[in-house]
Length: 147
Image (cartoon, rainbow, N blue to C red):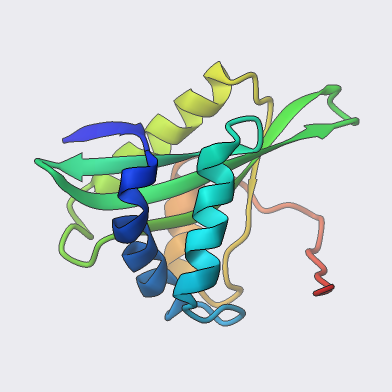
């Protein structure tokens, strides 16, 4: 298995993984055009973020996005972990654990001092997964407004 930064040639496979993820989430629905546009924005601007992938042979079997911002509270770069998804054929094999550890190490090398993520409220499997990798629940509550 290989872990690396995605390239623009990965967009079709990344979009398929996002279809799988967004078909399970409460707030989002698969939209290939929007997904491709978002992937291109990240891949074209590494100051904005990086897309990290897991490959088995040549097959892309997992992805996670690290998006960057600055915390004035920490006075440092921080990351937002988004779109963590493993292909259905690779789930339960440890790929997710290896990918998240790769992502955390990668974020630290990029100067991130904190990683934040969001999950669906009722996704207890994801909650257990992230907690097992050292994440804790925040006292902060997410609010959103589409503009």
